[in-house]
Every structure is written in C-alpha cells, then in structure tokens.
Length: 337
Image 1 (cartoon, rainbow, N blue to C red):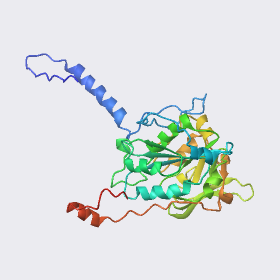
Image 2 (cartoon, rainbow, N blue to C red):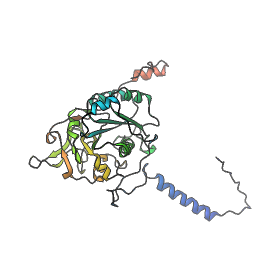
Image 3 (tube, rainbow, N blue to C red):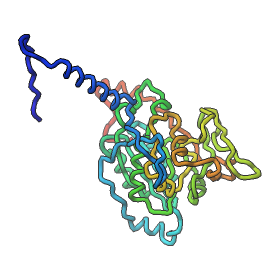
Image 4 (tube, rainbow, N blue to C red):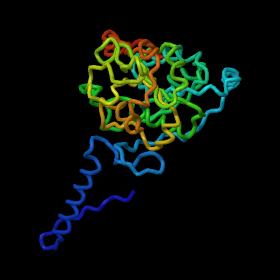
C-alpha cells in the first residue's frame, strides 16, 4: 500500500482552508453516522415477500466460510429411513470458549442424540472454528453443521457489563438463519437451543409439528420458578404471559420457550434477531415475523408442563489453577476438559 506523504507547512504557501474545513466536517458527520450506533449496522427494509413494510432488523456479518449443505451419512439415513414425512428439527446453539463449554455441550448431545430427523447447528463466537468443538461434534453421533462468526466489537460483552445489556449469541443465531435459508430440508421447525439449558425429550416431540409458532413454559428463568404463556382453559389460546421481567412485552417468552416453522422465515427472508433490542430479542423477532397471540400454538398440555430448564452451569472456582499458572506449573494442558 502506498504511504501517505506529509506536506510541511510553509508560512508563505497558500492553503485552501475553507475546503479543508468543509471536508473535515463532512468526514466527522459520516463517521458519527457509521460508528455512532453502538455497533449496529444500517437498517434494511424487510417484510413479507412483495411488501415494503420497514422493520427494525439489522444486517449481520457474513459467514467466514462458504455455506455448504450437509450430506447424510449412512447412520443418519438409517435413522431417518421411512420418516420422510416427519418434519425436521433444526436446533441452533450459539457457543463460546469457557471452562464449562464442553460439559454444557455433552449435556445437549445426550438430549439430542435420539431425536429423529434432527440437525444441530452449532455456531462458535470465534474467529475460527476450534479444535475442541470440532472433535466433539465429529464424535457426537448427532447430525450437525459447525459454523463460526465473531461477535462485532461494540456488541461484545465486557466483564463489567450485564448480559441483558449486551446479549450473547445474536450474530451466531443470525448466521445460522442464513444457513437455513440455503440448506433447510422442509417441512422443518427452527428451535433456538442455548447451551446453558437442560432439555427433556418431550420438548422435541411437542414442537415437531409446529404450524406457525409453538410455545411452552421454561423452568428456572426470569427470577421465577417458571416463565411462560397463560392459556385460556375455554379457548385453548394464549391470552398473556406469566413473567416478571418487562411484563409489557408483547411476547414475554424465553429463547428456549418457542419454536418457529421454517415457512415463516421463508415468508420474511430478511428478518433476523435485532441486537439493538437487548432483553427483547425474542419479542422483536416474533413481532418482525408479524406473529400475533392468536398465531401461537400452546404445547406441553396447554402450557402446564415444563420440559426445558434454564439451568446455567455454575462458573467453576479455579483459584488454585490460577495460582499454579502464576507459578509456571499449570495442570496438564493436553488433557481436554
């Protein structure tokens, strides 16, 4: 790249100061527009195909690797043989490197392993796909796609920031939705299965035949024993929400408490999670998909059963490990934890 030349000021040399000042002003305005939005990207027009309704979506980073659609292995063909009419479940899991990551993923693998017509989309928050996750997935026995995208700089959560102000996993979920638009086998249902939850097999049986958006309670979340829809015993329709956090949300539902038919994403191909709506990711996604309360399909015995829990593995105390590292004698780094 050619280096910029620095011109020395000479007192007798004439300078076009008005032009320079105008250019500087225009540059400052442009920089404020481009970077003064907390890491957001410009708005884009989204809506159902053929409409011009503008919604508050955002353009996300693209995949760092080309999108490739998986070919079924012999084992996967045997698992799905004779079940061509059984809708696929695509579970999207954002993940990031931390001491408990593998333990979390092992718990999810045990939940997913025997689910028929199931595909796991695991997206790492990293510059590159890590060897730990790649080895784990290859040995998991679960049909999977392994992706990665690094969260944008201003959206990355700092140690002093609360996760509700800087939610994790937004870029990763959006990249997975991109992948689905290219590769999803339909009929299909999309589920956002975070790696800090515990899943009972029943939740997958309940969601599989979702027509629009299915909903159910989630245990141990939102400061409550459970959080979820309130269902009318006479109509069987969702009439409101049992929730303490931001009760005025149109959809006061946890990420683990709903599933979406892939056709809805097809109808609104530009809709993604909006990182500018911290604490409202689920609510804004469903509203951008033009979902109403009447569209919701209550599952889990009219939302009276809990099949998923927000367990969040406790952060391990590694103070002795930190001491060993300072002494230059850490635990064997070749042993994968």
